[in-house]
Each structure stands twice: as C-alpha cells, then as structure tokens.
Length: 73
Image (cartoon, rainbow, N blue to C red; front, side, top):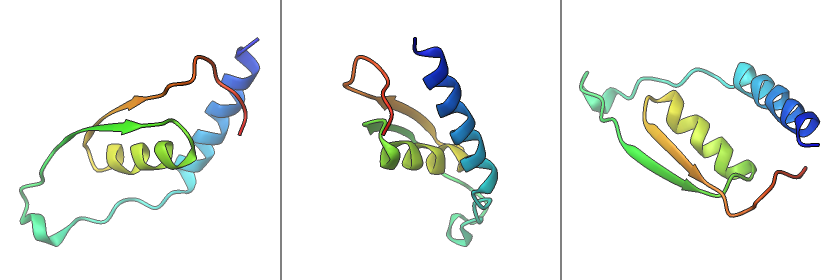
C-alpha cells in the first residue's frame, strides 16, 4: 500500500537532488568546516529541503515526523 507512494517520493527527491546546485564553500570557515548534529522537526517540503541542504554541507541530520504514515502533499 505504501510502496507506490514511497517510490514516487523517492523519484521526486532524486530529481530534486539532481537539480539542486552544489553548495558553495563558505570562505568564512577558513578551511575548518564545522560539522553539526541537527534535528529537523517535520518531514514536509520545508523540513526535507532543510535536511537536504544541511546534509549536502556534511552536517549529520535527523528528521522527526509526527505522522504515523506517509501521504501525498
């Protein structure tokens, strides 16, 4: 029952990641990047976009979602 939704979500996320620009190096880090452990509350569009952006900058991201099951937006 969830398999088609998970497949669709995976495909959309994959397309989003391919189209997102590579993160720029922050010149303020002086070659010593800070790696954070971040919690994102909510797996909606904003939460997932935030998690992706942070993960692409090599931060450890954990997503918490209240919903018991996945549903389309």
